Image 1 (tube, rainbow, N blue to C red):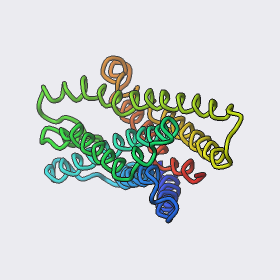
Image 2: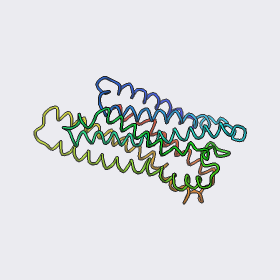
Image 3: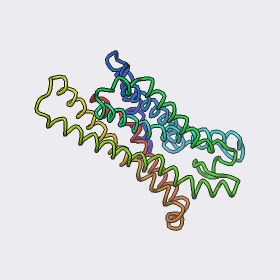
Image 4: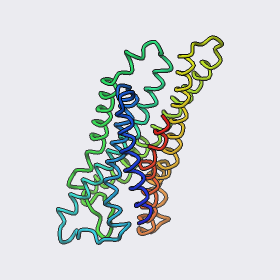
Length: 283
């Protein structure tokens, strides 16, 4: 865990900062897609910053704040960490979909790009995604959510009704809205993009500029497929864990085994937010 987090931080922070510098170049910063790339990169950086907590208490093995001695501090830190991390994860997933839709609009309506794909529109869309992510995860800031005794994991700590909601309802909603639904929509949009690009390639008479546009669209398609594969392979296992934890895994695994498995899947999920920039750098 120690060396894994070191690798994620070194690669992630360096890569994402480099990506932001690239997207702020004069030739790119006026493009709507670049604005979305910057937004998703910032979201990934925020997620990695929150992972420092896991690095300190799981990777290095520091003793967590004693919930018995400092219950207020421990619970507040747990709420804040869980809230920020969940908001960043939700935002990144739907921002990735927004990038795909932006590229799809450019291919589907090439003569209306200046009207549909503007920086103002995509920034409003990014703000809407952020507001929805905050609203969806706002319950994590309630006093009924906090540190679970004897672990670095957060969860419901008092209310029976809230405990049922978190474990039986919200865990499934989280997996569906944060992983499964964005993945399905990403595949639909990307497949349609691929079909339309293939149709453009079959046209016999094209201007040089149009040929370049098709080439750029193909590059963006490859980038999106890479991002989708990375997102799917790192997030689906965690999503399935959240769905199956209560009905299946709870009776098959001990508490320690479940926590260890969750830590492993969280680390795998972190890979998506650390190395996603590699696909962006080919633009």
